[in-house]
Image 1: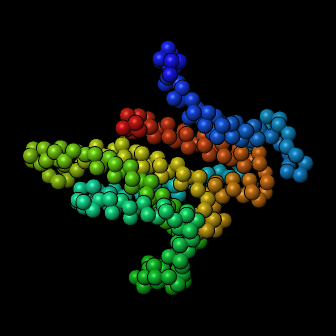
Image 2: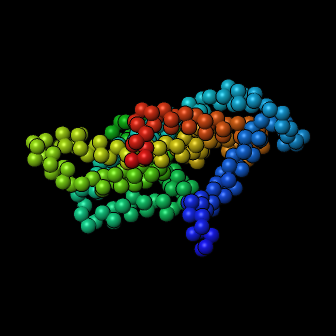
Image 3: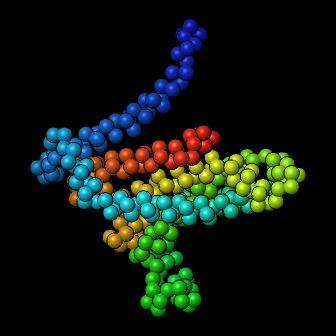
Length: 285
């Protein structure tokens, strides 16, 4: 204690020290090793040699650009769908359910108590060719007599949307729940309609939740591979499927590491562009 009294300025750094050590050991060090591995050449059988093989990055982009595009396309569509589903649902919970708020929030979070793999496997039954959803869509002629949802892009996007929906809903709820109801009353006192009050008061004040929700949904969705693996075919594979295959099946570690770094770099560039478009104050709001 006497040391802390004599060096009060060092106290914040001492408090940060455990977190810094944790980040160095479990983030910086593995990331550095991954970068080192991405610049190697060779095979699993003959061994790998570090020789600044930047060509691994070019080869990864050249050979798997379709998977990168598909990953961001699927993640973007899933993020938009999650926002469109979550916002009205969470708005209703925040302003209309009263003392039942916690119950409905638990219902939103409840799927997270089931492992990710099991949740995705459940969609195999939901979207099965002989299941009720496909049968209904055939009855109303949205699908043909032999039409199906499994092994299509629709199934993959639906699985991603479902699995990451809570990550969109919870930040939205926090933003909406913090809105002072007196602001809405003031807007109505100034003769604003319900629609005008929503557009000019509720929606802007919930912007931090929208920004946080879209980031928390899009970033992990872009790297997902489970949904494409189980609900799609190789035609729907995302870059996460390629990375997983190269790490665990092909054992091409340099290529897999290069793909991982490219994915991280593209997500970071997208994040910076998004932050610039919406304003950094909304990211920290």
